[in-house]
Image (cartoon, rainbow, N blue to C red; front, top):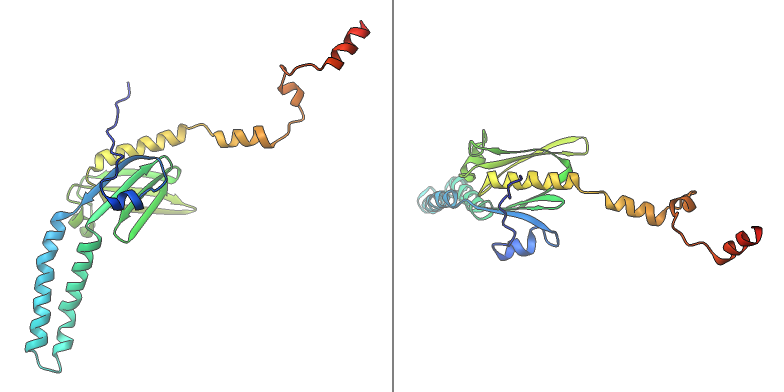
Length: 214
């Protein structure tokens, strides 16, 4: 007996409703918010801002702007990451896995996926992922033509997300290829049409000739 996998299909915010898997039948959604990473970056941004102002005001006039470049870049970088990488929205549909992580959006056909696993080490070897994936991440691998591609991203419940992705893959693999059958039935003409329709009604003219020959 197959266990029912829990799902969440309702969008949790306006952006998810209007920008993630729009017009598709969604089987499951996952939304991860890296609040800890954002809170850690806010003090660093503030420190970089203070350092930038201090260097501009107190350093030598010729060196002030140059010395302030590094903390200013640090401030902009941390602020950008905090604003754009804090939320990861994933949708599993009947045809794709769609991941929206800041400016990066990835849509992978279910049939192209070669591996989908939970990374229990909270992001594995990449420190950049560990900062965001406090609850673990998903490592998705697929074929793009002849190229092998991979994408690792955080998830709120990576175990449940992987279970739903694999369930969608199984459903897609076992779905009947109705499109091909319909095309053959409607668009193709078979030389054995009469044999393919044994229950077709016999015309009155044929019946009359058959009666006369008897």
